[in-house]
Image (cartoon, rainbow, N blue to C red; front, top):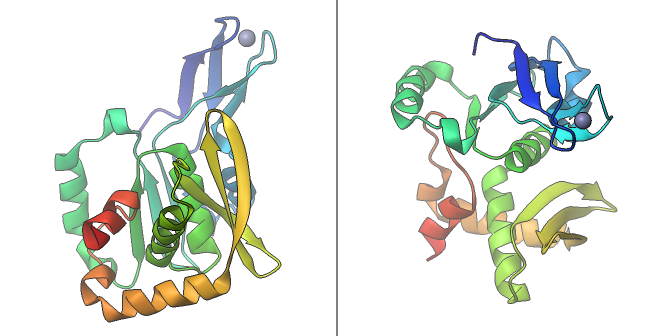
Length: 204
Ligand SMILES: [Zn+2]
């Protein structure tokens, strides 16, 4: 976590790219970082040689002291479960903080947006699960991307094409009811991974 210069090569021309990064994203101290996370800009580096925008994902911790949550991004290739367990052990004393662990940059952006909006991310995973079942066809992974006209907005990427659609808040309310009736689904301990796999454990 020490090095704050990220190095990579341009995907288009191969030139060296150096980017100054902040692995600790505290939006209480630096509120301007919030939009950069939501837009994904934080992971984009422009090549100094050809101008191509490169995606450069790095491990980082998003911390919102006001809304009391943290989202930790550890790219899959860097995931070390022993380290996670050690940190989870310390995290038990974090009180009513919501702590989340994600391994993909889209999940990281989605998770911070959900918790920033004051939504329940377990409920959002359930909404996605229910919706995917309803649509039947292979939709690919769904991602929450905001609220519009009192609908929850989601997008999916299938064969490189992005589609977005809204889901009524009534579905969210129904899923909240399911959560409340299933105590096991509400347990909090350490940096939890609340994702499609998590919801399938309960619904399968
Ligand atoms: Zn380049």
